[in-house]
Length: 257
Image (cartoon, rainbow, N blue to C red; front, side, top):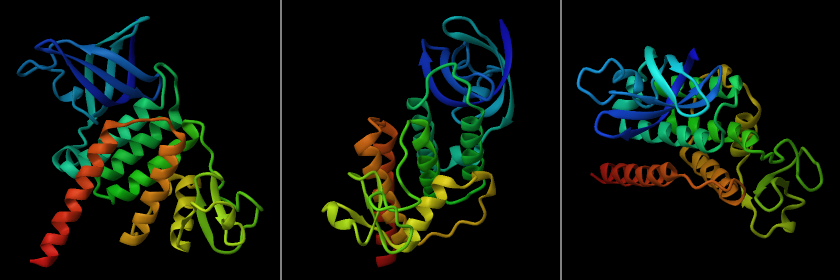
């Protein structure tokens, strides 16, 4: 059975000298794996359409097992993403998080749109670090995690100063932080953004301007939560952390010079 689907390439693996197995997250069918025969050959008509992060229309022969890619029409190459190594690292992390959090052939149009919009914003040059935090917060419900962010996880208060508690699964107000000695203090700005990223519609994203210290708070809170509850080990996360550290060191060296 042949079917035309809209999708984005999230993973590629070389198979033999000339073939690829690609994983596409599609709007209509969810995650699909398929063979792209000859995609690694010079001048192959499948070469461009099977590059990571490519958004396109794909004609796939779908069966009970591995599908076969017949042809594709590119909608966006996401060129900016692939030309910037740092942005590529963020996109690869999003793609692996999506891949590891979903099963094959489980349609989820909302998730497809979330991923597509995230890549579009990355490709347009928006703050990759902040976009990644938004994507991580949106993915929590997909993997079955629901931190309490609208009020204190202990007393239900919506007023006061807040900290983040991994143990208590969300925010704790200043009156309740004593119940978790390992709570992580958050600035009002970080609390506001955690809530915003979790609840708001990504399509309404405007300009992004987040201070470095606030980004650091967000990174720590989100990473601690994922490490504790997600059960996911992502190679791209380790690589991204190394890239971020390298970028930080280069920035400090440039400042010193």
